[in-house]
Image (cartoon, rainbow, N blue to C red; front, side, top):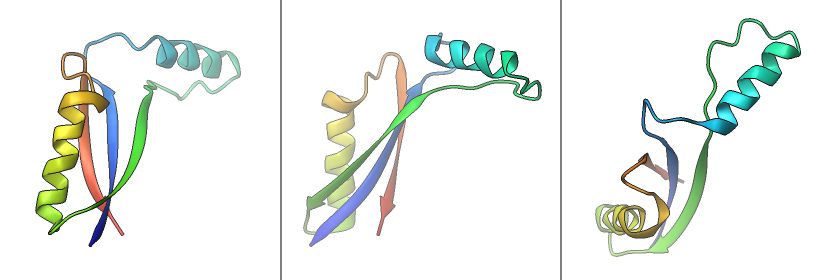
Length: 82
């Protein structure tokens, strides 16, 4: 069976996010004064074959730990999709 997941990766709290800081300043300069903070991340969509959803999710977690996310500076969340 095919299972699909979305992996959301973002920087860990307290680490600099230059893209977020630049975008935050630009939004303020454009008059969006209510913006308090902005941060960037990425979303990866993965579809894979698996015997069951739990095993497929374990495989996606292993992918994150080994390649997709840098566990030193990034955190990730995995969500099953339909």
